[in-house]
Amino acid sequence: MSTIEAYSYPHLPNDLSRVFVGLLVNVKNASAIRSRIIAASTAAGESGDVEREAVNFAFIDARTLTSREHLLAALYVALVAASHSDLTTKTVHSEIIWALNYSNNITESIKRFGVSDATTSLIVVRVGDKQKLPSGSKALVEEDVRDMVSSVVEGQWASLDQLTGVTDWSLVRKYYKLNSDPVVTRFPNAKNASGHEVPPKLKSIMNEIVVSAVAMKSVLA
Figure 1 (tube, rainbow, N blue to C red):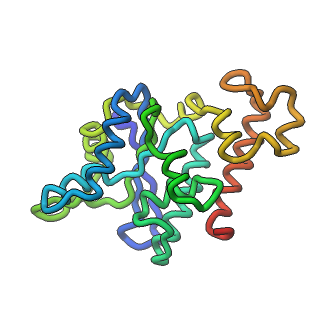
Figure 2 (spheres, helix red, strand yellow):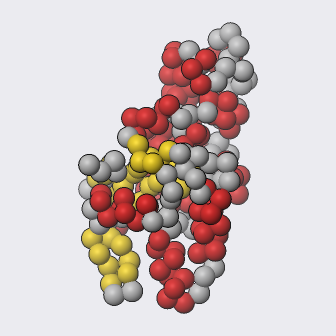
């Protein structure tokens, strides 16, 4: 059974109307993935095109996400920007990562929310229902996306329902400047709590704050 989730946005252009999302944990080759993405960006010729297609995803460090809603808010900001040919970054996939960042700094967004050598859990996002091949394009379904990702990422597939279990709340507080937020600081030891030490109510509040911040990104950018 596929652990890839598919989302449809029929009001958007065809190339943006279908999105696939998945979660992988126990990722073993984050450094190699990062190197492969960098190399693919400058690879020449047909082999370069093939390699760029192989890594044509948004690779997001899952520790930085608080919920499915957090991810989908960033996704929609990127899709709307792409639909209006108003991307801040070069691709819709990098735009998703940029939309997650508190500031508009592109390099910072990739460093904070993209795959890094320390990444052990990954969210992968693929926008579009076509795979570009040297012989033409191929329609994609969930299993195709799963196979494509598995050829790049060494990890275990997990349900997106498990996303909150890998959230690093200390990173979330740092990246979204929540350590000085008056709503957050009223909780005892809020600045130091992590994992199961974070009260459910505080998690809910922080999630609402970051989802709202991401949703407003396109307005404030």
